[in-house]
Image (cartoon, rainbow, N blue to C red; front, side, top):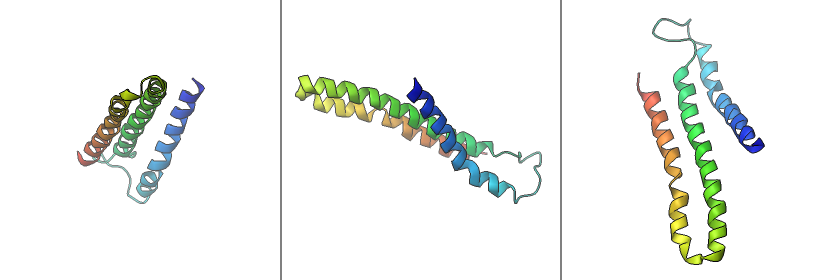
Length: 107
């Protein structure tokens, strides 16, 4: 449980650090209008989409990896199956990246 909380806090720090240049660039622009909000929520939501999907994928791969290590010690012929099972959570990161791109591109 402590590792999960630490991972969530680390993800929040990474999201904030990645969005700092966006906030610094906004300080140079004129005051917010009705069409342009003061906070760039697009950048924050794109960073959250990627970071949450990466955190979830890392958690899933850790569980699959430990189970695979135990199973491969008893049945080495299952190696191909576990390679596929390790690759499946990677699609979450790819989908999170696609969602982040869509957020940044869409108005």
